[in-house]
Structure formats: structure tokens, C-alpha cells
Length: 145
Image: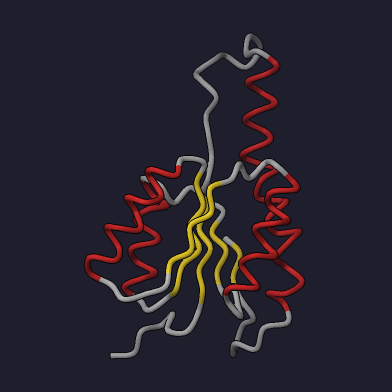
């Protein structure tokens, strides 16, 4: 049976646990090489170790805060140096910033949530889209989730 992601690369943010980890495992099962991002290196290493126990794929770990524009730009350059494509970008990383009624939420919490949940995915798309658009995968050039 063909693996639908054979020869393709998936970049997954928030891959250290939860949905991100499960997406990474699924992509590896379907033949993808992986770029895994999380702010927690220990959890990224755990995800990598889980995957490599049962799947043969190349995995590149990148521990950065996706709301840091310079770090996202650097990661994007490194990814395309290491791999010739990013077929799927999964913007999975996110935080809740604590449970507050919206009118009493501290501004610092609000800013942090917006930085990670909105600015981070925007920075990733901004830095990866142009190269992803030029890829030659039929019938699509890549996916951004």
C-alpha cells in the first residue's frame, strides 16, 4: 500500500504533546519526514523517540517560541537547507493563557495568547509560503493547516 506522504515533509508546531504529537505519529506512519517544533525540548525529544520506535523517518527538532519573528525566520531557512520541501505545515501550537473572564484578563496574558496563537502561525506562513507555492507536487503544491 502506498504511503500518501512518502518523500514529503511535514512541519508541525506544538509537536511535543497532545494533538501535535499524534499528528506527527500519523504523518510518520504515512511516510513523511518531520520537522517538529515546540517550546519544550524534552517533550519534543519524547515525541521523536516514540516515533522512531516504530517508523523509519528523518526527524528534525526545532525548539523555538513561534511568536519570535527572528527565530521563525531562522527555522524556516534551516528547514529548507535540510529538506527540499515542506508539503504540510500544521499550525498546532497554542496556549490558553489562563482562564479569565475577558474583561478581567491581564493585558500581559492577552498579549501572550495573541502572540502564540495568531502571530506565530502568521509568521510561519509568511516565512514558508513562497517556497511551498513553488513546489511541484501534483495536484497541489502543499497544505497549510
